Image (cartoon, rainbow over the protein chains, first blue to last red):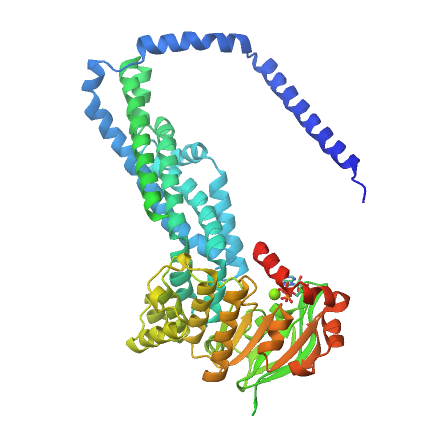
Amino acid sequence: MPVNTNFFLKKRLVSLILIGILLLVTYGAMVITQFDAVKGLTSIPQAVEWGIKNFYPNQDALDKLPRIWENLRETLLISLAASTVAGVFALVFAIIGSSTTRVNSFLGTFARGIATLFRNIDVAAWAMILLFSFGQSALTGYFALFFVSFGFLTRAFMETIDEVSNSSVEALRATGASYPSIIIHSVIPSSIPQMISWLLFTFETNIRSATLVGILTGTGIGFSFDLYYKSLNYNAASLVVIAIMLSIFAIEFLSNYIRRVIL
Amino acid sequence: MTALLEVKDVSKQYGSDTLALANISFSVKEGEFVSVIGPSGAGKSTLLRCINRMIDASSGTITFDGVNVPTLNKRELRRLRTKIGMIFQHYNLVNRLSVMENVLHGRLGFKSTVAGALGIYTEAEKQQAVEILSILGLSEQMYKRCDQLSGGQKQRVGIGRALLQNPKMLLCDEPIASLDPNASKIIMDHLQNISSSMGITVLINLHQVEIALKYSDRIIGVSRGEVVYNGSPDKMTNEDIVRIYGSEAETLMIDVGDKDVGDKNAG
Ligand SMILES: Nc1ncnc2c1ncn2[C@@H]1O[C@H](COP(=O)(O)OP(=O)(O)OP(=O)(O)O)[C@@H](O)[C@H]1O
Ligand SMILES: [Mg+2]
């Protein structure tokens, strides 16, 4: 059979058109927002210079460390609580929603629908919605993180179950094992390492989101940053940023270690 | 001897246009070693899975050990399944668990909900698992995790799990399709031994005609969802093989070795 050159020509043409559209959209956006690319680039050295001059912790800022640490701890604990509680709920929903372990197709679709809904609303949007019910409190941040983590983890757990335990579930079903036995002896042992890995990933993501959500809800480390930044105390604000960065590194190091051990 | 398994006019329709099984009828006597052969897509796996209702047949009757399979309720179906061991091409073990734990899974069907969920096994069950593992030559691997085993060893664990059910019949869906010739022979010898010394009926799907001819008491040839041969391996002629596999039969028989490799890559 002769090679269909038209086929390749068409693919190349489609690629070209896509690149063209992308360039056009970028240019259009720049015109509309009056963003000057040259000015944007040349302002970078200036920003760096300003950062070096002002954005470093001094003795004054270090005195505020206990306060900063208190807020940081609150953020870390909220992230941890939101991730783990979301993990428990996600496990139940994932088992109901996965095509390998679902009880029936109606409940399966329902579980997947809920997960999709919670996952697709951004954490900042959740925070704004929840501000109405809980006001500016830690609870708002907690629930915002919980909802997004729950949606994401349900999806991730569902795929893990389908991928890892599909075949052994079939085998246990064929032995006449009951549904709870199948879940406990096949699904859980096969998927637990990957699930823990996803849980750690969610925890890391939540710390990052919690900082931003904290600015919105006036709690945790995000609040500290907001406070110092708005009161022009750049030295203290920089200490907050360093504290956040260090804790993210520490958590990531820890979770990579846990991953290595369990996988 | 009476028939242990009686399959009558069984059909299976997938969706609206795939007729995987078309009025299949045959019976299997207690203790028989029966091979099902046929080209890819003939309906062999579907047929096997209809017998323990991993797939529900669209019509027809299946009688196993005196019970009518299609009408069983959930609880009765679980009881039926405990009497039928199943062995898979890809072993279908819980890879992160030990050999022993996987073999003991064969007892889960007999447990109450609580005992099953907690995985409480009796001393006698553990003892039997040890015996079966020694028969299968896996005594040394007993506490190894299954992901550390070779394919042939994994399949023996699969056989062990099925045997711990004390089944009346084994359903084997291409148990050697992912194995090299050496491991294949070990598995087939074990199955033959199980059939002759324990009196367990074996119904096995095979891709390799020669192996089916060598080990079986009877061969059932399936083509496009229909039984086109049902008789002893001695009486099988080249025409029969052409009838089962179509005009490609000749190449198929020569290429048995290559096909094995192809299967492994696919899996
Ligand atoms: N879940 C399914 N949904 C739709 N069609 C299916 C499904 N499973 C099997 N089929 C179709 O039914 C027919 C028989 O499939 P089956 O798996 O039983 O064949 P097989 O003889 O076991 O083939 P192989 O030797 O390749 O394993 C095929 O045409 C296949 O495409
Ligand atoms: Mg098959």
